[in-house]
Structure formats: structure tokens, C-alpha cells
Image (tube, rainbow, N blue to C red; front, top):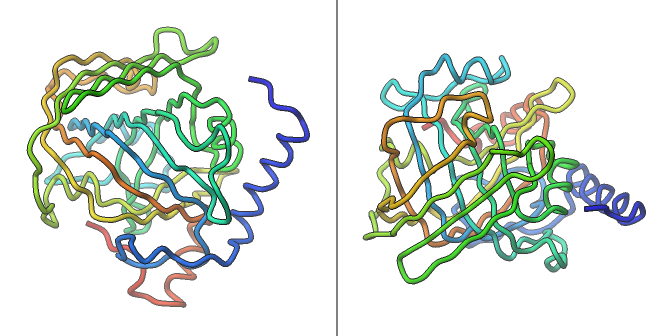
Length: 286
């Protein structure tokens, strides 16, 4: 997709100004107040019809693909990888309404769980999305490994279907498909449980020009359901340099989650500001 040069320059300018300036905008009081990040919200969005698929993985396989500044996070001695397909709605900047053509689309991410100076977060190996402008903007502003994809989704009552095929010259043979059924509510997620470890994450990490950057998020507590996988095939993990799992995944389904995002910050600056302003404010490791 070709984006007119003037529009492209404006979008990058707007995104970077929002990230750097942190316009003064109030925090939504209905979000899960684990702690409030400093500065202003960048954007908000709602995730819908999520399937959370997770597998144990050898830590050494992850270590080879992660920046040396990050540590592999573990639960009960095991590292984990995940594939999360979902649809997004109502994506909007903090300062205004949803942007036409950017507010709703589907995506799937391949991720693992890490810490940086004791702070738990998420590292993405890939994010395949159906909206080319969103892919371009996310790569430009957040420097995350987004890829354009053709995605088809269907849902009827408790049955869901998700099909994704990466586009472009390098996307041949890289895709994902899954059919699943959502089940009964799991109830309150207990701190220290595997579900808590996999979902209660309030930072993403990326690396820009040799520096680890962190972006904080806030949301209400996850409302999870059990899930049953009926069909599954994927090459997303092998495309990221990891083996495709041979064991069945740990599954969770979530109907909806509203999320707020804050701008990226240098991790050294973020740690310093948190300790100066409020040493108890930073999200503690699980």
C-alpha cells in the first residue's frame, strides 16, 4: 500500500510528538490500577475474541534470539512462548476520536516473557496484522516487528475461526490457522498461577538504535475462559527462528479486554523516574 508522502509525514510526526511530548490527558479511572505510569496516555484500544496459546520452551532457544539486556522470565522453572490471535476494535489516540481506517483490524502475535532489571514484560518475535497502515505506523513509531497479513475471522456463539497468511516476498509459507471453542469462565486468576504469569504483563520491550525501550500498558483484570482447540496449524514460530511445538498448548480464551497504552521510554530513564517519583509505583515482578 502506498501512502501519500504528506500524509505519511504527518502520521509519523503525530505519532512521534505524542510519544515524546506525552500530552496531558487524564488516566481512565476504570482501568486496572496496578500503578499509574508517569506522563500521559498515548492511545487506547479494545481486544476481542482472543485465543491465548502457550507452550513450554527451552530457555536457551529463546536466549539466542533476545537482546542481551533482557532476561528470560520463567514460571516453575520453565520459559514460555505464546501465539495470540485476536481482533482489535476502537483503537484511538488519547487526544481524539478513532482514525478512519485504523480503528479496527485483526492480528496475531508471537511472543515470549522477559524481565529487565526485575520488571516483567513481553517481547514480540512477530505481529501479523491485516491493516497495512497500522503495520506501517507501528513499525515507524514503536519499531515493533509488524508484518502485513491477509486475515479472515469468523465467530458464531462459542465457535471461533482465525486464518492468517503473511504477505509480501518474504511471507510465502508463513501463516496460522486455528478453530476453537470457548468454555466456562475460569474465575479470578490467582497471583503466582501460570495464568497470572502469562497474562498479568504491563510492559512491552523493544530495541531502538541499540537501546532497550519500554512501553507500559494498563487494563482491567483479564476475564478468562477455558478453550478447546479443534484445528491448528502454524509456521509463525519457525519463521521467528524457533521450533514449532510438538506438545498440545495451554489454552485460554478471552471475550474482550480494554487496554490503555503509554509512550515508549528509554528503560534507564523509566527506571530512574519511577524510583524518584514513587519507588512503589513500578509494576513488581510476578
